[in-house]
Image 1: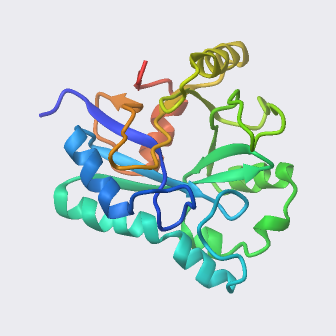
Image 2: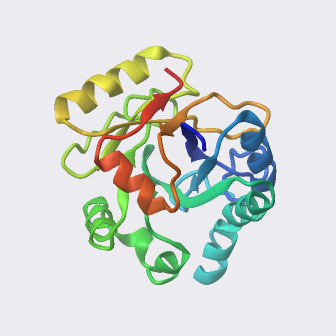
Length: 226
């Protein structure tokens, strides 16, 4: 029996993220070889750096959005890697990792892109979703300003292992501690040949995305990439 289990929590694929370099299948193989037990695919949603054409019918957009996850999961099933579903929701450069909802939920909300941000938070939470503020203090050309939502997010990504400037993670850690929010780690991986070693380590196997949410809410897990 394993003594610990490692999970990547922030991962993009070339099928759905315009910045993604590697396919979902390639990501599955790379993470398995690196020693991960599971990954959460979090491709950029339609209001972020999406690879999905914006002029398609809603159902087709959602179908194509989920391809990277599907390909990752299919390969994961063959090689013994757990694969869970999520996405990275964008708000003018501020981004939120969203967990606990599925493809059917997206299909049922074709008006999601018209929602104000407060409504997005409310509806995600009403249906059992979980929101992590991704890299809240990152400085980049696509982020015009730092926006914080301590009363509306469930956790803070205090380690984004892809960051070259350690200050971004230091500020996120201080912020999470000040606000009493759970701290998590992720790699923000885009390329199967460049895995940054982030993610979460638990002393038990996660059998669903809800297990991940429960573990983070209760303060379980060790942050990888420190």
